[in-house]
Length: 113
Length: 116
Image (tube, rainbow over all chains, first blue to last red; front, side, top):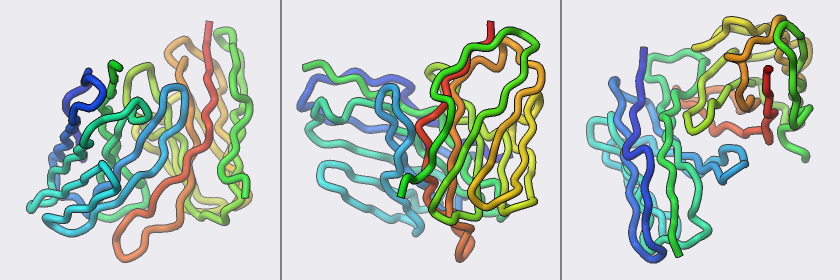
């Protein structure tokens, strides 16, 4: 079945440094979604990427979808303490079916003030 | 709108006990999902439903059962609790796939279950 791998598993940064997490799929994706989960909270949708090579920005966050639609990245510029949490990518099933998204294991972002 | 609600928030079970985790949404979403999240890990799909009366297994269905009698409610049943079922359980909902693409999922606050 479809597998989605995310690296790194953990990332420690100093406040103000940049952060990047990478997502790779074993199969071509129909779309990729990114979610953020604050400590003790639930996943919250951030964005969806659909087109090959697509780049979207949300303030200090930049999301990219690879040309082959098998990988994606999330980059945060100048991290702030409010960015702490786990960032998940979730790949859509290009083969159809209603079983939704395949989630990566997430990258835990830890920020040291 | 309350979004997706889950009860209870916390529960401790003894081995062999049964319980039902409740999930409800008021967004008129057809699709609903149950995930489990083990400490420090990602989300694993247990069961999902594309509408009232229709359910299907996800990646890790063993030890669980679901029903979907209404659009709003999607309870998850644990019949014989085992320590391996200690986890955080999230319910989620979404609109149906459109144009071959999944829509964003809205998650409930989760139920933290410990089986001793």
